[in-house]
Length: 640
Ligand code: SF4
Ligand code: MSK
Picture 1 (cartoon, rainbow, N blue to C red):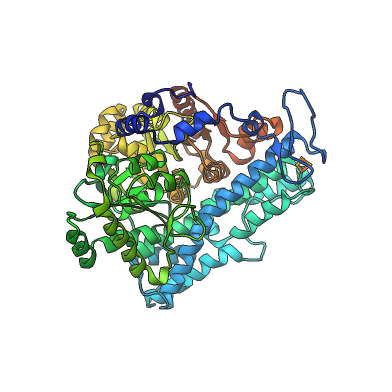
Picture 2: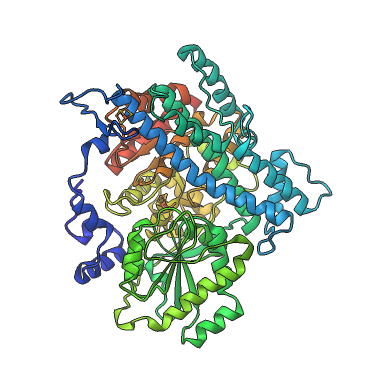
């Protein structure tokens, strides 16, 4: 694959992006693509994972080809260095998702005890479902009392100091998977002679454990470091992310199946455009809600605008897309392009996946670039601190800031590429089961018959090393062609939505079995399950199928991919999929290849131990071949 992008067409397959990149070239706006070229050649040690700067005797680097030192100053090997770096990536990724979940749990507690009145229990049915799953009594109890107990259990998952596994995982993970992970603890104790667990004890503890064990002079054993990376990542998937998803549904409403529009064409030339970007819908859902208030509507009209048009980017965009039907401006690599339209009056960001370059770019336009979190401050931005207990007032203030910017818009510089696709979104586990008549049995029957061969979950970002959306789109098309149902989240989901793969006519691209199922159920062959934290919905679906069949997740014809991954959160997601028994494809290369033992553990040994493992592949068609092969092998093992 050509990494040195020389034209807009080699940078993205998205027609709207191509148009905007021509404008960028003409006007001289810097983009991720241009900065990437200036970074060439990138450091090979970093790409292989063999550089260490954990202590001040370093930085040390190991040349895996034997030219140069084979050990760091302290004696650390390439495998130790690679495993430590990987563990730290998993800890950061897990912490990002889980800290998001913590905020939602604390908000639910505040709503339950009445100290926050700007939010409410929007989905009492989901509240009862979550409480029942956790073993919390619900009969004859007020929603606030139930919510208080749910919040307490969730908060305890973060800070529990005992050795027992976190409650959310115990109650949500399918029984056979839970048992397997428990048994592994004994097996590893016997083989390694050291205590190594896979079941997380507390969400915060597992990340702190990694920070401790990767401190100078602690854990140097690649297997032990990888095992803790799996445990920490599982605390994200079956802990922090799961808590975020479940409790957001309670507080903001569970998503329902609905059509939406996706791509930069959702911006409106005559309206005040507010782009919400980041991950936490506690803010973005409020911005959407307050934009519809009479006061904001009147203020917009007073400056000559048609209305306030809130649109989304990245995962907070996915959250408001699923719940409130908000238009989706694009995925990660679209964030700069949105500002370049000249039609964005405010870009409001919370946390994660926000380029600091956006502040400089916004300053070339009238666009107010607004940061809202003390955890994501960006020089050059206007900071309006978001506080949950004053959510209505702060969201209104943010919208008024956008409205005030609207008259400064230079209409001559506005260019909105007229591209949008329709996407049917909102396929939560609950909505999928509802479509199937309330039970997973029809889906299982279709898989047993081979009408659908299996299910592929695709996640992750855009990455400048891959032509934007190319891998997402090609891999997805290849899989549905082979009668493999594709589900997914994050920036992949946005790529699929923009590509039209989530619209009903996309069923014509599917194989005969999947096409027929889509026709019968009135669904697309590619299902949007939400934001990055909503990868927990995919785990939950896998767990539902496994428990229904009384098998382990690793027995099911399921496979995962993160084909344009960028962030440490993607490392955590991939690792908790593997820890849950699902094989995961990755591209671009993860920074582990400089450690042969770590590479072997993750790509081979994990298969026997966990039932899930990683593989890397650059070509989307070959990737689809391998994913199909894994699915067929699992089908054969099940005797179907
Ligand atoms: Fe070098 Fe060891 Fe220090 Fe890492 S911990 S920088 S390998 S001396
Ligand atoms: S937003 S983690 S770039 S998917 Fe969740 Fe997209 Fe990846 Fe961020």
